Structure formats: C-alpha cells, structure tokens
Length: 152
Picture 1 (cartoon, rainbow, N blue to C red):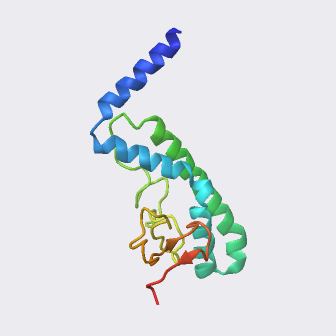
Picture 2: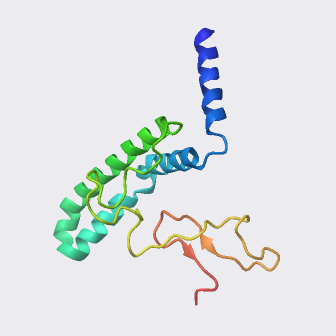
Picture 3: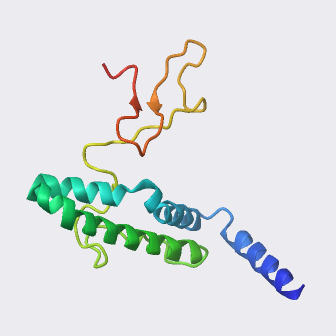
C-alpha cells in the first residue's frame, strides 16, 4: 500500500511541477514520437532511399538497411530516455544536427525526402465536411496513401 501511495504522490508531484511548462511537454511529446520509431519506420525508409540515390541499389539493400536499423534503435532509446526524464530540466533535444549520436546534418525530418506528410484524414481537420471537399493522408506511414483534392 505504501508503494502505491508513494508512486501516486510522486506522479502527482511530477504533474504539479510540470503543469503549464512548455519544456516538459515538448520533451515528453518528442520522447513518445521517438519511441514509436519502429512503428513509423521513418529512419529505415529514409536511409534506404538516400543510400539508393547516392550510392546505388546494392548499397541500399545492405548497408542502407543496417544504417537505418541502427538509427531506429538509437532514436527509440533516446525516446525512452526522454520519456523517463521529461520532468527534469535540460529540455533540449539530444538528436539535433551536429550531435555526436547522429552526426549527419539531416536529423529532422525522419521521413524520406520524397514524402512530406500532411494532416491525417479526420473530420477534425476537414475544411468543409458539408460539401465533402477535404483531403489528407489516410494512412501517413504507407506510401501511396495520399489523397488530395486541391493538389491538381
């Protein structure tokens, strides 16, 4: 019973101290986004695409995949760390251009260069639901799921 009470008290204190602060909110959101990297597969797709463009398909199917998996594992571990430490100060991101963990200059965005995500297709983001004119990404992480009415 004491462990549950102590945990609840610690959680309440963390919520109390981080309420209204933009730093912890950004750090927690960034941590959740980085932790779900294997669901998005953004680093893997991006590494394979860039390896195919710059070094050829043989390099993309071997070293590009390994490089993408390594970057995905790193991003996931950094995300877990940011979730665990979101109430604590130092709210700057670890993965930024010029960092020793990910030394290339293109840390963000984590999707391939040929894809620029838009809003997800939901009634919340629709511009005019009465007329049926709207657009968005039905499944943003699946290539080819883009649905746009006004892009043509």
